[in-house]
Image (cartoon, rainbow, N blue to C red):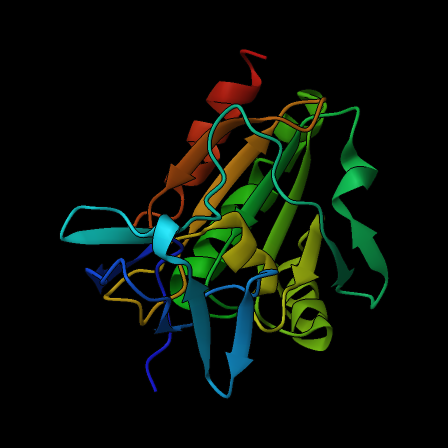
Length: 212
């Protein structure tokens, strides 16, 4: 069974006769008040009056976070197993960076680059938070090995990654590397995506922070 890797999925449905209500089975649509789960599918009941006159119509699902928005709240475990909520950082800028995995070459370079520039982030009054699907024990070992002074959060199951709409790379096979800068009011001011040049995330975020 295929799964959706893109945060925005479109479903094309053939035209329906306006004479009688119809049922359409659509994979992986979110549950709503007029939908029923039937095993792995949802049966969406559509009344005759709701059917458009065109030959086809489109359903869209979007959970992507955009610049100028407040992203979805979260509470995740840090490298010490403590619950950390996004709301904890309100009142100061925060850099939230999603990365594929601990101990991979690109992610190690990125984490160490954040470490080496950490005093610059502190000078700008900002916190740095890294998020991946690794568990807390993996984060703890990773942070200890490379002396990382900032928070790493465990998003097991990639729930937050999906809610924020972080795009995957390599046709959906590699978790995306995306950085968000939130201002002191919790509003996104920068979104930067660069999978294969991880160190560039640091320069781009610092440049934005210094202008806030």
